[in-house]
Amino acid sequence: MPKSRRIVDIVLDEQSVARRSPEVEHERAVAMFDLIEQNDFRLVGGVPGPYRLRVGIFEQRLVFDVRDGEDEKLRDIVLSLTPFRKVVKDYFLICESYYAAIKKLGPSQIEALDMGRRGLHNEGSDLLRERLAGKIEVDHDTARRLFTLICALHIKS
Image 1: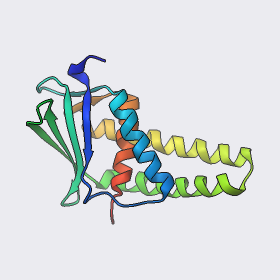
Image 2: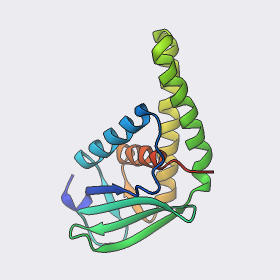
Image 3: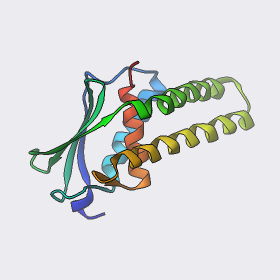
Image 4: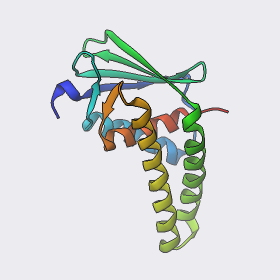
């Protein structure tokens, strides 16, 4: 992907990050690494990248602080958390079941839970792409990794 369509640095607002199980923390670390390694991200109607991205929750809203390669603010993209609440909650529930199943259930049961987990992950990433439409363009894999990070911020009720 050309640098004009890439995130080269990402930071999660540590005050927003809810500490979860070691498995979820591992997923967050992997998503951040994978996101930097490979992504397709473009600010619609804005300056081409490379981009630096800060993601956090402020006043019950999801904030994407988009910056240029020199760390100058380009734009804040602010999204309501409301549309994400159910899918994030369901995703956490199935992840907890999946991690518990790995320790004590058979392969077919684990596979069924993993399929459900991936389905919810896809649902969340599709929702994110829909909510970002007209503001930020991302491909499917980038949206999946960003959704993982949104889950890591853990939308607090």
